[in-house]
Length: 300
Image (tube, rainbow, N blue to C red; front, side, top):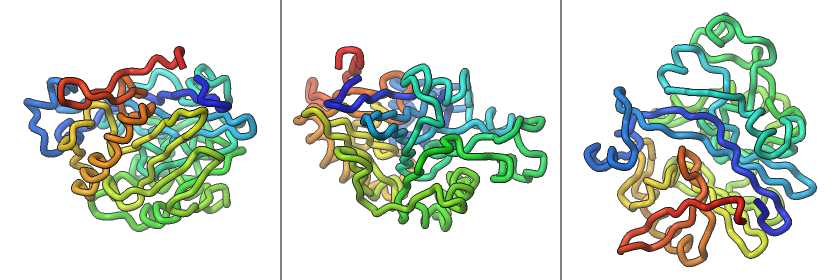
């Protein structure tokens, strides 16, 4: 699809699953299961919807998904159902190969947003991991940057937090996804708020964590907005529907109260990173409530 003079494509990574109770926080299962039915392990289906932007000068990828460096045990635990590599989907949807990407942007460094920063640099050992790995995760010596010619951008605050995480989100940070490119100088530590290219702005908003960023693309009189994990799916639009993973849920609530009326009044294209069915939607008022209406990208 075209936004002004930029081309934008959604690059879905793969289905994975997390506990529905954790994903919907204080909302009772009897309510959330109506819109997001769980499996027999109480997990709900989600995806990672990365975004490709071609400015004519830069080829940008926002987020890199969950990655392909998982052991069989972890694939089962997270319900990862990978049909094809991210690189293949990138080529099919955007006509672009990993070596063509010039900028990678991570809103934060949780494994489901930065897992695809690195790929195995050699065929995996039995079980999908380096035999020397004690924790079931491929370490830096077995992986290389998936986007070898790209600058990787993340805020300096988020990088600092990733290296000294909170007890409640420590399990979400796997250093294998960023330490090799930090050590090589390919990872650039950015300000809390910055502009990647004209029209694409990153903003740090406290809620899911202290240092996660959202992104906003203004082009051709249209706005596309990526909520990252503050509103991970369209089912999280109602104000109380906030993830149990959020470190600062009351601030997530304040963000939603502020941002959603703007998204409605200005008819934003809203990107729900973890939505498996309708990642790109417009939000409207219907019968006294906010709903997400899927957008047909072929019509844009």
